[in-house]
Image (cartoon, rainbow, N blue to C red; front, top):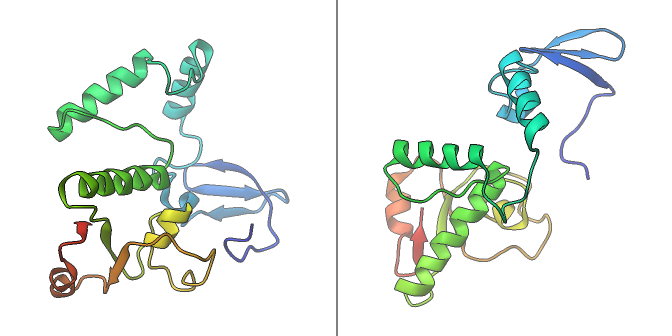
Length: 172
């Protein structure tokens, strides 16, 4: 599925902030996996941690607990001051979880309210709901019909946010 214009380059290696194509040309990577490689490409500390955990247990599914999961959840709960953690695989999945929690709250406490205010030009992921929530130019007619319940306001306009909040709003 085409998500962006791609140059005719095939990347084969990455280290730190650098990428190499199959012809050996080196590129400074300003994109970093669209901001998901915050530690750069192939950092030794991550490779070592992956190898150590992979040698012990890869993934037993969310149906079971494992020690690293429990330790991470505890650290996140302590740092946030909250008492529950939802571990997931991507930002889109995290946003889907937040959408579901907000709508569940609206169903229980606001007589079925389900609208969420989002910002124009925002990006929330590439699932159907997160694309519906996103305000990316050009996404308005992709994958119709959209998931309903997302009201978009101009980015940075707090007065517009305040005007958009009503009895159907469950989250901003």
